[in-house]
Length: 181
Image 1 (tube, helix red, strand yellow):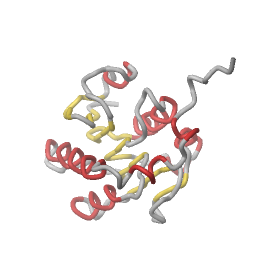
Image 2 (tube, one colour):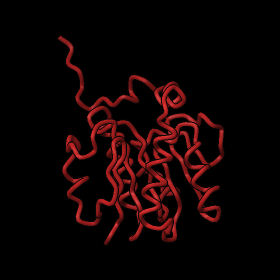
Image 3 (tube, helix red, strand yellow):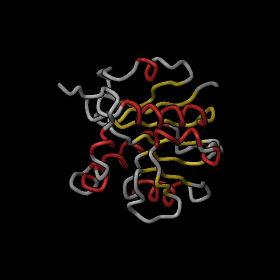
Image 4 (tube, helix red, strand yellow):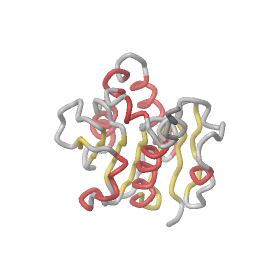
């Protein structure tokens, strides 16, 4: 009997996931709404640093955030494939992100749109680790959740991290501000 690996992420079986789902649902609009709601809480004030999105898909949200609020900030997106063809979106399996020195930059806003913890633990953890290693104090971390974000089916270290303070919870997303190193 062949055993299914508990460490196989969704990306290992469905590399086209972002492309096929991005426009079939209202997910893009929900992400934009959640990000704007979190930014309202901090009066759209971000510290120095770049804006990063993990699982950027077609890069619609990142471009709108930059254009609407932070034209002076650099943006950087990661996905398994550069669906948009934008030069600031990197084709990268995020599970390998920490091995790239060129992506070690101070982050003001990190948006983790990678698949859920229960479907893609290693991938989601890699995005989370990169964000936590580079997020500056006062920086914002927003994470996608397909289920109720108050239901703690994800690793305890995410919601018990004493360097983060939860500032936003809504179906689909949870937001934190980094309060200390």
